[in-house]
Structures are given as structure tokens and as C-alpha cells.
Length: 85
Image 1 (spheres, one colour):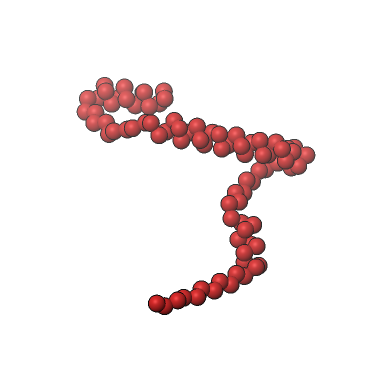
Image 2: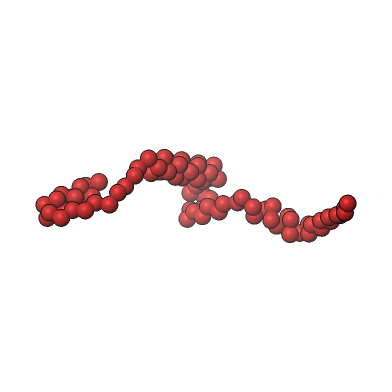
């Protein structure tokens, strides 16, 4: 029976850099610190996540199929419905 030995060498500087960057999302705003506090920026960021989650929930149950309209009055009615939506 053969036995194997595995050795692992980790570069501490590379590990530190990877840990700092992994899972970080940047959020850029165009406001000074006097216009918005840090807490306000975080609140806006959390609202963005709620909006994206709600958008995914709305989008998932919808199923679309192609529409084949040949009569001009139906095409106009469909175009009007799309504009109103």
C-alpha cells in the first residue's frame, strides 16, 4: 500500500489580500459626508437589496410565450397595452 504526503504552503500576504476582497461589494455614491451619513448610505444599500429581491419574486412566476398577431387592429391593441403597462 502506498502512502502519500501532501504539504500546503500559504502566502500570508496573498491570503490577507484575498480575505479583504472576497465577498466585498462596492457601493459608489455621489454625495459628500455632510450630505449623507454612513448609516444613511447603508440604509439605501439595504433598500436596493430589497428591491432586487422583490423584482426576482415578481419575475419568477411569469411565463411568456410568443404572440403571433396578424390582424392590424389586434397588433395596435397589443401595442397600446404594452405602452400602458
